[in-house]
Image 1: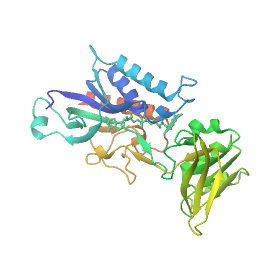
Image 2: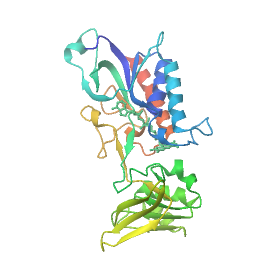
Image 3: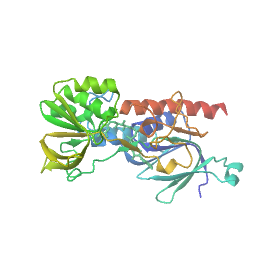
Image 4: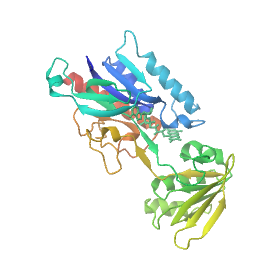
Length: 322
Ligand SMILES: Cc1cc2nc3c(=O)[nH]c(=O)nc-3n(C[C@H](O)[C@H](O)[C@H](O)COP(=O)(O)OP(=O)(O)OC[C@H]3O[C@@H](n4cnc5c(N)ncnc54)[C@H](O)[C@@H]3O)c2cc1C
């Protein structure tokens, strides 16, 4: 059992959690930072062009920079402790005996390796993972022409024929970005109505380089070393068609990493943590959340970092107002 209580536990080492850790240390909050991995979702990107202050860097460099920046503010003489390679499995309300004792613990955070840590406040910054395309060969050709990020990888497909999978706003927004570089964009959607806003659908479909087909199942991604095509089935007729394409952009939704928190903070219908966008507070007093694990509309590295900084300002105020 833990023998001390932190002011704050930050969970997640993507842009949100890393930014929060630096701020927490600068504010001298007694903080424990726990992350499964460094860098977050864009660690897989070959190049990131929009991380402010750096014209271009790889996802791996971004992760290394986060680690360097956070650990430079941790260790001897600092108030920040870092636990990497650790996964949080549960957050519980601390037993009454502990909250009533000198420890004054409010929450207990448990990790996969059996660790248990007491804290007064928590910032959840565990991000999300993309819903993966389930089709033959999709796994094998991921990052080899099959990608989950048009704004990151779109320019690599200049003058090529590409497919977007997904008929929601993310699918149509990806198609809109790709139309700026690609020779043609074909959007494939599984149902017979698009979920994206009508205005967006109309605007995107007006482009002469754009086509869309509804009511299809994706069966297979073709290619050996790189994507060469895609096979889909028309659900009404059963007819199978193969399209020759060089790129496949999948936008079929995200799955927030919030399972471990669902019994302590309210989630929305998609499993995202509901927050007040003014201060990042969840509906549970003492717990804040930031970045892609929350119900914010836009998902970018800079946004996640900024959200987390906003949370830290509010956490600091809450601690010092007590
Ligand atoms: C392929 C791809 C490329 C992208 N490229 C760009 C780009 O070029 N520019 C841009 O601005 N945005 C890009 N994005 C979007 C951007 O990556 C996200 O918006 C951003 O990473 C969200 O940051 P986050 O800190 O909220 O969460 P994440 O980046 O998802 O980080 C979550 C962190 O929490 C950790 N974690 C998760 N669960 C647990 C747990 N239970 N216990 C402990 N730790 C846990 C993870 O290991 C990870 O370190 C891209 C996204 C993808 C998928």
